[in-house]
Length: 223
Image 1 (tube, rainbow, N blue to C red):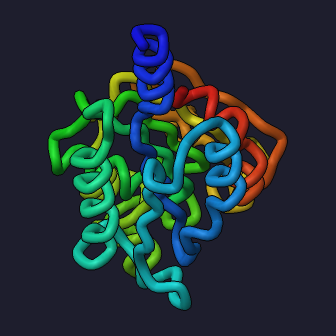
Image 2 (cartoon, one colour; image 1 turned 30 degrees about the vertical axis):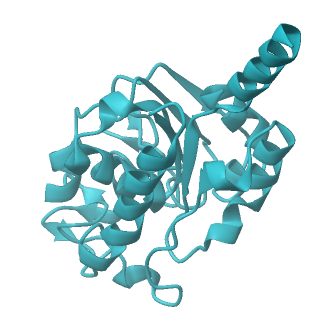
């Protein structure tokens, strides 16, 4: 009986993992995480361990920013994941604008100490050169004061903030979005690099391949 109880206890402990929040990019859907979702399931996660908030307009990329209705689904997912996580901590992976949106909500909720790993994939943490430099930015929401123009009030508000106990970025120098102007660098630093990060990983992949084709690396960073 004691042996059975020990085996049961070990099985329970092995099954306890951080809840994971996967935040998609601008105009994308939770299904954009299907490769990561399937990979995590193959590694012992259950569907109840994984949260994929659905945020923003799907038809107007220029309409989305980091304010109001875009925030709510991501904030709710983070709170729910924390409340349900058997470890009391979570891991967060964001792609593209979802990375900066997730970072913002972690900061607003003041939960960085409860985030074991934060992974930003193809995020524009230092701004999109294609948006211009605030306040001389492209005139739309995505590039506005709550958006991704270089030195926007939004980006300035999260600059230097810590988003987890471990922070990683996954990036590319052929990213069609972050590097659309021909350069990926903002003030000499790749825009997808995150200040204070523990490590960064470069892939010869496009903007969307960075999300779909790095599931194994994503798992390594959060396990």
